[in-house]
Length: 489
RNA sequence: GGCGCAUUCGUCUAGUGGUUAGGACACGGCCCUCUCAAGGCCGCGGCAGGGGUUCGAAUCCCCUAUGCGCUACCA
Image (cartoon, rainbow, N blue to C red):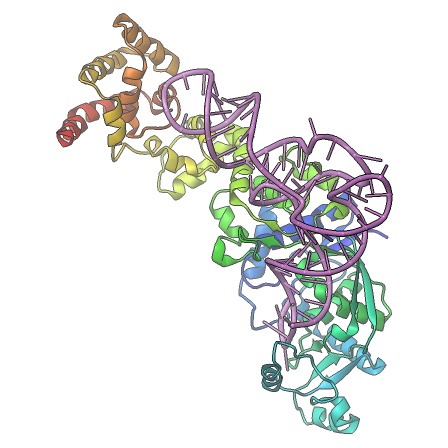
């Protein structure tokens, strides 16, 4: 039987990084086994629905390079792929469970249930079908009467009293739970929508899903699902419950402690390849002898059996390191055109492709993310607004001004303004006077960039160009120098 | 509270009875050097604890501890 897996998010806003990893593992698994990947939207909670989130989900998944074979955006033979459009199907199956005696009607209101919960000492509440308001306490006739009168009701799963429910998880192995610890789960809500438990079992079966790969938070409800599969007489898909992604303090990854939306990382300028690479390695590792893998390699090497059991902390430092590796190795032209987007977002237009290419080539090794170049080297985009005074104090001597003026004149004479020529000329000047490069290179850097750090100074000068360099030197010597020397006193 | 799952350097992990417990990121040092990076070399640092089983345990079993998840007419 060919592999069919699904990613089934809830349209509640953004794509959670944990969700992305789940989607990724499903994607890897599907591709590796030449199977199908299905996108199914679990929108059975109308109160949590966020307008436009499905489009956003698909957009973000696409950014990450995940392609679906079936889904709401592309259709497919097992649709509809919105659960909200499958209500009759769930209703029919719920009725079937009632008929077979696997489910029953209940009339307790949310308020009544809440009250019962409050009364129990330590969250010990479990639905008691022999004391609450349902078809067992009310009787069949009364039940039908209430239903025909239009009294709201839910359909609950009738969980057997004391039965050991066993199942096998590909990642965790044999797991066993006694049914006495399983609640009579609501399957069909009073608004006619199914709960997750009914909907996912029915859909996974009807959509012929062969492997359920999802987050660990679903592990405790597997017994309910097993009961449902058995009640319907259906085969249970293979199960694989992924470990959770955690905050630095090992709590479940949450909004409070950083960004959890994939969209946030897109906005920060991480590359999709790098982000996917990083996320994929949280909870699974093909060999551990390196950390950079292409998507194709991840697909080829992926094995559910090798996924870790314990949760993994989402560490941005590592993400940055991986992103930096991609930044150092991507083709310059590709980076340059992408860089234009970030540069323009910051309000810098009218920069040539060639200029952006040079800036990226010179500075990419000094930052973790492409847009960081703008903050790291603002002098590439505008004249210095301020000058590092500490840097000035450290490298300025009584003769520095004179040398800078001489070098400025020297630069004016250079026709071929490349880093090599400038370097040679400046060094010639220094050698003639028996001076070291350090005596002028820092003052030059300060005058031209305002900062104490940056790429090689001759390379920087070449990129900025002769006119700009001369302008900046002149401006510094005439306007800035008197000012800061004044301050110094 | 109940039930379930988990536990190898700070972090991500390799490891499936015999290894000096390996790698990467981070951190520290050195080299390179016009600064900052990058790169190279070196270093720091770990099997949660306790019992078993075994000639031998990070690996198998049990207990404890800790963490996490679930315990909704949310997914």
